[in-house]
View 1 (cartoon, rainbow, N blue to C red):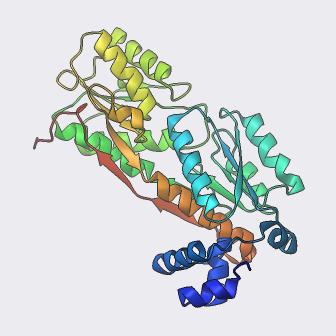
View 2 (view 1 turned 180 degrees about the horizontal axis):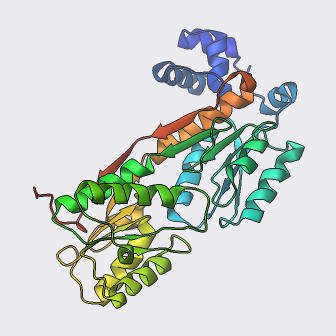
Length: 340
């Protein structure tokens, strides 16, 4: 005979409602209680009848994830973490990519009008806030990244201004003074590059340095090729930085490649800091100093926001602006910190 919710509740020493919240992902449950309930679910081999449950609730058990690039190491890792977090809620994830194209983002956002999915997590690069928030009125929606959503949609992001400030400050503390920024993207509306540039410039000005326009290199995308092209342009221009803050690890790896080709020693001649904490950076030569967002928490907090919208009275809950932690992981691409 198959186990029932009340059997799990009795074994875990909690209410049937608490077990239901753990199984469905609805409502907050303390981590220790969730672990105890999960252990009871595993011991009894409880398997919910998802089809029946979703039919009764008018839901499909399917959520959407829209990201710019599946081949990006950062978004690939994040997508895997979101799938894992969704599995804990017995959800299935449908994933699509937009390459940051506004029309593709709009099509995928508006294509959910038939409510095939119960909710949507999207990392937009090109759509304006008003286009995103209009959709949040009739579909549970969570935004990832720095795209502003003033009071109209849940958003989960790192503090890119603070993180960029910390990365640049680290370079300043190693004695660097000509710090280039590779990564501004004036053609996008997502705010990521703008905020990272803001934090970078803030750190320079606090150190009494006047930012040089020649040391800022915009890019079309955040890939290795773009980083290599930007680094080549910097060196050919005669601007000659003694350090680079790249707005993504892929950009930093491209810049590192060019530095090696030009005979520059890293970190002695040129220090490099990236952003994203991708695995490739750990195995670069030298290993890349990088800002590491808590990607696991991004995934978990995004799906908790989505669950609260799907299962709760969304109209009565103000949209959340969730900031997740980050850390600066210092590796071989920057000199040891010293007082200056």
